Length: 274
Image (cartoon, rainbow, N blue to C red):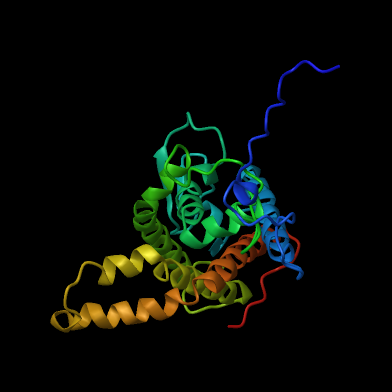
């Protein structure tokens, strides 16, 4: 039955907004554009599940001379005693949770605010946008101007903290050249795992966009700063591989933790080379 009123016109946004080309399809891509965000979301999701399990496990994270990178430095009084390790009891008996929760916030914050990881999980989880030339399903877009995404702007400060953590993990690698009795000059399969892991962590950390800007940013004349220019060139070369280093270091830190877990839980003994 007619009422004499005109139905309201639905609000049209995005690719269907007024002034855009009148194409009924949301995109014209015919390739498997969805594969990349799917793989990204799957791998990151698996890492989150694994890291959450290990962070709350509060066990099997130390076996001389190896300590899991998830638990170093160990800042609570409920830490397992480590022979020469970074078990600094800054938090007393009132802290009853896993000590990993006191440390993981720093490397986690660094990766969450990383420019590459933003692109990865924005596309993989939020579909914002899911791929190039594919419209996102959201009607509104505010970028990183509102809470909580405005906190992405503190990435540089997490970079400083990540440097400290990387330095401590480097110390752990040095300790990995000891035997189970604390004697120096020994190496096992775990030592090799730790060396590869710390190399990838340092490469990923130094390839950060913030690091590149800190070294070479705000310079009017590179010729007047030859040392910084040389360092800027090295960091720039690493920055070109930032995505590869982000993934490889993420995998390597999980492998290093899992290796310590296997040895500490008695699944197998660490093979010693010498």
